[in-house]
Length: 288
Ligand code: PXG
Image (cartoon, rainbow, N blue to C red; front, side, top):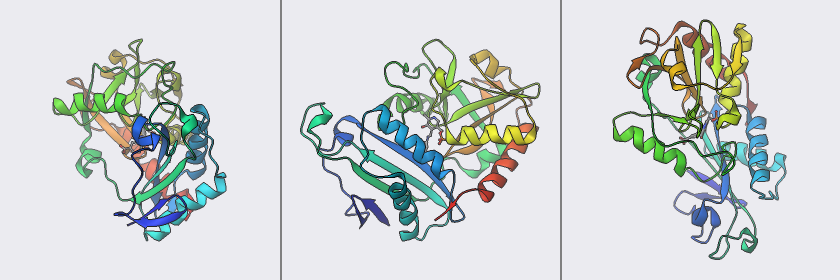
């Protein structure tokens, strides 16, 4: 495996960063998870735009143009002979000294990894996932905006641990007002009486690229969409539910907190979304 690390491609064994990098010391940095389908990068421009917004939000000045970063992403895929896979693009604050101030960091580090990923076993895409809500709340946007895809994932990891601890693979996180925000690495959707509902990104959700793709699919299917506050009750009593994320793609949910969703099987609309989503990823993308 070849990894892009500061202007060069190095082997996995040699892809090492300093323990003085503030990305390691403080989680001071940003990332993107991007999919490669059949030699085409899915929604590359959208990912690069979000990467730039994340950088802007944490005042990390990226010394690379969008074209340069885009070339790094595509070249990393080519160097690894990948046609399908998962790309992890990372920018850290860079090497500095001990102490929080980013001012003592010389320059940001750019890293790109391209590999294979399957978050959930295939059977869950067919049978659906059982999930739970957990006590760990999504961090308040005034503390750390969840729209920033930062290297600080402890909030989500704590929620994931709570789910895993009691035998579930994914958790719904509520915001500090008690509304549904998102899952630990996925956005959440419900369908009720033919309308698609999803939490507002201002409720503490990442503005997921796959979320936007699902909203586009809803448009293609002529399904009304409402972005609004959702309660646990709304999810428990939904006709259908599914999650979206770059890693998970689009996965049906069949049970939440012990309540069956709809018939307890992936719903008819969800299956149509899945089908349309797969058509979309095979049609669209930037050729590497
Ligand atoms: N919410 C959170 C908190 C995320 O981290 C999403 C929603 C979905 O966003 P996208 O843009 O991917 O549709 C994410 C993305 C992993 C992994 O390694 C997680 C994500 C992306 C890539 C890899 O588990 N989460």
